[in-house]
Length: 258
Image 1 (cartoon, one colour):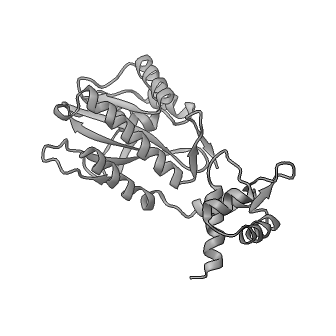
Image 2 (cartoon, rainbow, N blue to C red):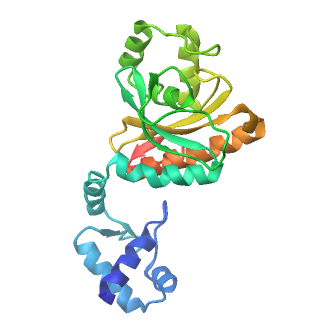
Image 3 (tube, helix red, strand yellow):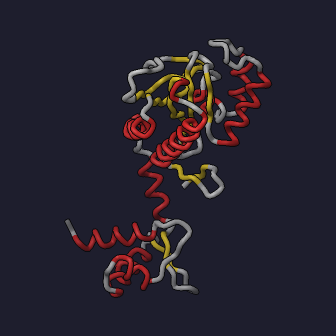
């Protein structure tokens, strides 16, 4: 490896810290490198706009030239390449079967599935298609579709798949608004009796909800306390996948473009 390049990359990594600028001395101390070395690296990066220096405070932060590089990199990240390891992580965290769902017409299609270690399972097969208003994973995806799509979906008719399926348009609209507000969906028995679902949307670089991620568990393993844990884990992993696709989460909790 070329040591000078490693040092330069270490400087960029250090500057990644959000909402913070660094002095030369701080970078020198953090990276345990001589100030002269840090200065040469920073000068080179500044000349290419990879780093910018505030002329008043003499502090450094990442520069605008990196934005186009990052966006170019995310274009090469495919959903099906990025999702499996994160689905496996979610399954390991929750010990439940986890799923990645995409829109297919007015249905949600299971694109990826990872099985958890528990023997008692709720059957949801890879490749299965179910209406988007059924279950938390699919509803979290429906909630973030364009308004015109949601109107067309409701006009198409809300068929009943189980006792708890929402078939009233007003009730569904209220549920979708809650999902958008909270960033997470929870359901029980909406298309599989005795099953609890937890789902969250996955966003691409341009802000489109391209998928949803979540889990399905028997009600016997999903008491109120456990559901709260599931919600946190699912939201965390969905945000991680969104980040890999080019999105980051802002301090307000809403997704923003890099």
